[in-house]
Length: 572
Image 1 (cartoon, rainbow, N blue to C red):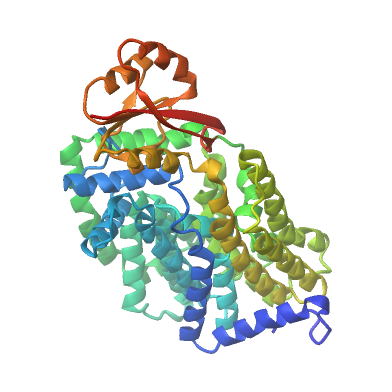
Image 2: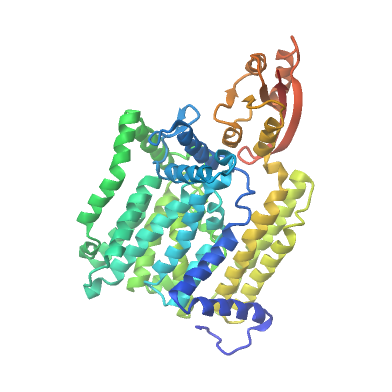
């Protein structure tokens, strides 16, 4: 093991550090062992809370509901949310989610279309693929043991752990991006040998580009294109790209992506491009779409939390990257990260997961710098920066306890021991770094990450009942004594409620509409947000008053404020 202080006693963190090293040694025996260890680590990080986490407004249930409507309508071309065209992203994620849910139905899963974890399976697969592809990519720069460590840092990261549990595009997009960049790295690193790239590597690159386009449009081509452009400028030639056989590859991409784009053009009359390009993509570039504005430099701050625990070590590796920028491997990693990062910082709309496809490069850079002795305790400010490793889980532990107490009046006792354990192991990672064992500190930090995911998502999240507004509202509907009641909502319009209650959930605009809805006969239910309560009572005064069947209070994550609703029903 590379260490600045080889042979010294590692101090009180010895036992945990030796455990982490033994796991690394176990995985480094063979590629099969490395992949098996990474899969186990990923499942430990990703699976707890996978089924119990409620549909997370707003994006996740929008994707899931649109996929559900594909199954309901049988239309695999158009993308719709209730009666509204959802022309923001291409069709790839909807096909993947629909296929999984259809398979669940075929296997007899009861109520498959409203089980959110089925829609999350493509994201779980994407996150697993991201970790394994990060290992494959890292092998172009590092020996097996260190490539395993870099991939483990990716798997233990907070943001990938979150995206693995959300039925959205980002985990699959990241997997496509890493696959494309891994193949591009092999073309760059072997260019001097003038060797022919394996056909599987070439095929991987172009399939990743095609799949990435179907999942999220131009993002994968942007990552690969900007990196290839920068490297070609450095090399003063783009001839090295011929190893990827671009003529054949572009034909393959066209064959794979063109059919759906032609079909949606015919179906929508070109409206898809106006919405996806004109409104969604250019809207994010020109304005802070959906109130997600943040100033340039935001990602430099939030990355320490979203790419915990690796980000602190990646930050300490930046001087090494600059000093060695002319080396082929380091040049590639810089070209992977820097131009795309600058694009994201320049765009007014900022969401933390945008930079997730760049994090594998940061992990490889961090491990490379540690292995070459460039990241160690004696660097100016190194010990202080490394304190971010225990600071993040400790801060999260305190924040979750405060949130649970303020929202529900409880302490999350079930998750608290594991949260404290994750913080303690993260502190041992810092202690190991201070003792002069930076590579071992990285491995211990991975163990902390393997504790934090289950603590937050598996044990603490279920206790936060205030955040589960839509599931509790849907339970009121399911408890009615009549089958298939018609439902409507006044005020509260979150997509999660549509997903759980049904595509035909009526979105009402006034108390008069709500009162009239209940008077139409049959079995009916209406949810009325508190701000409309008086008007609804006045509109319902004439005639038989509706029966209150329940009340739900909680906290709306998107609105960032408390919310209360009462449910009223009429039954035959």
